[in-house]
Image (cartoon, rainbow, N blue to C red):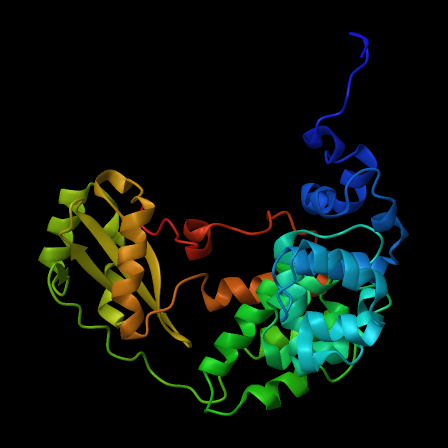
Length: 349
């Protein structure tokens, strides 16, 4: 063989091409392994079967398929049989749904989300009526609580942040009412109209049907010490070098509870009461130093058994919903982290 003649190594023959990477995305290397260059048999598959291939490659199919099975069965099985391989008894309408999924494959986690929605009867009914089934359309649906997965609501929720806001409002509206109120609220919120009507209904229902005075603050054991006296409050404000003493009025009214947390980093923790109950509103170290995430996670684990919630206040959520009703632009980044989701406020800075 001439010295200037080169043979392709197996690694080269299976390497994904730019076209394959464009179509297969995260699955390009897996597809290259199963179908081999020049990937003509993969390109020849109808788009629904390419999506089914991705589900199998991600090991999300109910029937485990090895590489040879994937290549052979997706090429020759009937649609109904391919659907059964993917979702078992839920196969009805599955390939029709994948036919609306576009030409490009999605990310691994997006297939998991889609399959979970397809298995949910209410979400499935919405998916069947979507003109296109793509992550941008179904990810907001996935973030809605199950009772809100109704077509009039889904049409009005255009982003993941909007779905988070509406879902949070729904959970709090349910929390403020008698057990079994989920279906009634969902019907009320989906009773026609546009996004303006939906978000205004949701904001209005952040007011409870029955009014109650503040409930007793949680009794936290050591290493938490609750502040119950004015002199103790003033001493703590001096020790931690903050403006905690300015909150004396709310503490005296029983609408705020403040605790000294003698952990590895001493901290002051504040809970605020509103119509949805007690909420973690602040946690700071000396001189208003932010607490590390691991400490905040420990704090939340301590508070959760006492029914203390995290996240924004009812007033803040209602304001956000009214902004959505007006169509104001949302500048928040999607997928906030744990600390961002707590939405702690600088109460005494």
